[in-house]
Image (cartoon, rainbow, N blue to C red; front, side, top):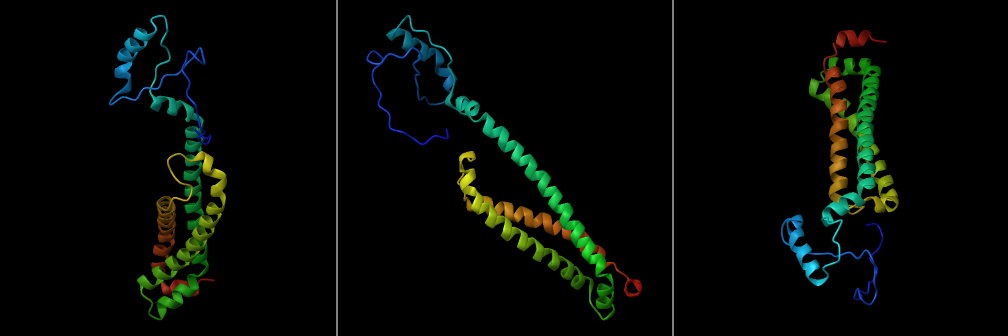
Length: 197
């Protein structure tokens, strides 16, 4: 499936005999239902010719792409683990920096900042980090796509929908990771925060 299409010349079997000739038959509906009909048609032309290893093209493609599908599953599993680790990392960084800014948050709240303002402050910090990470990640992935073209089936290496979907998923995960520290920051008591060192 990975090799480029080449020109072929089909010659009669009597002219160029090959002991394991392959017959391709296009049918409408379930291909395995037509096996008895195919068997009869072949034996009408050559009664001594055995018909074996009959299967559909779909099953052949599944067998041929088994290693690629296993590799894709592993890459997907590693991607999921990486997504979880990234969410934990973003949460840890935002929680740490928010904790370091406890005094600043207390001052802001003491001079009249509302909970929504504090939430926007913390989420904005996470949003900046997320956008920088997404921009860097998309740029690197676009550079690496030429090496991954052979592993992709049924999708272009620069499929816009895939890039947008993955970027949106990463953005949502990052915002969810930032929301917990942002929510915690809105509950800071200004008096305690001002005493915080």
